[in-house]
Amino acid sequence: VGKMHSYGSDGNFEFFHQINKDMSFTVRGNYTFSQNIIDYYEENKLPYDYLSVTGKPFNILRGYIAEGLFSSKEEINTSADQSGFGRIRPGDIKYRDVNGDKKIDANDKTAIGYSTAAPEIYYSFNFGAEWKGLGFNALFQGTGHYSAMLNTQSLYWPLINNTTISQHYYENRWTPETLDAKYPRLTSQSNNNNFQNNTLWLADRSFLKLRNVEIYYKLPETWMKRTKIMNNAKIYVRGNDLLCFDHIKIADPESYGVKNPLTRSVVAGLTIGF
Image (cartoon, helix red, strand yellow):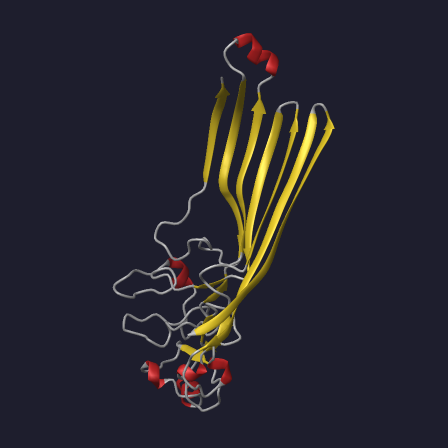
């Protein structure tokens, strides 16, 4: 039982200019913003307001706030109790005691990011130019207000269910000599503490991609007339997903959690019209 409202905006533009009979250029773009807000949700009486989903975006990411990695047993003993996740050792993730009760549990979960299912912002822009049949087109696409939970087994969460470990994790793992490491200690045993939804694994999933780019040459009409068969012909080289500007870096933000990531491609071809 609940109620939710949606709102947003979108727009697009296109500009074409013919400089002379031999040269022209085009610019296009669009932008979409969409958000849902939960106005009411029938939920049990909650001890803290921040636990409620009412008034927050639908599918907002919730979890624990990580305050780094425990460096010593003394730090563990003087911090909020995290024993509910099992035995805690140096190199494990330390969580913020949000409600101040000296114990880390479900009451310390809070909103930590945007949805991981779909971004709130989509945009794209395209531009192209042509001169005497020689031209190019480029399409960029991007997203914003988009989160990722880096829970890909092996790559970010190693040694779970007999999975392997990535070189990236191994080089950035916690050890007694690397107290400022990016990732928790390695262990082949179950570790419920380190693999909760939390800000250590949180990443900004927004990106800008060069979705496709094409360079082409249209054969002159006079050549086509001589063939008495072809009306037009174009030679081209086309690339797909050649560039990606993002915050995740070692994985594709569109497919960071899958075993078969997206691929880049470059093709050359000839198009003929009769």
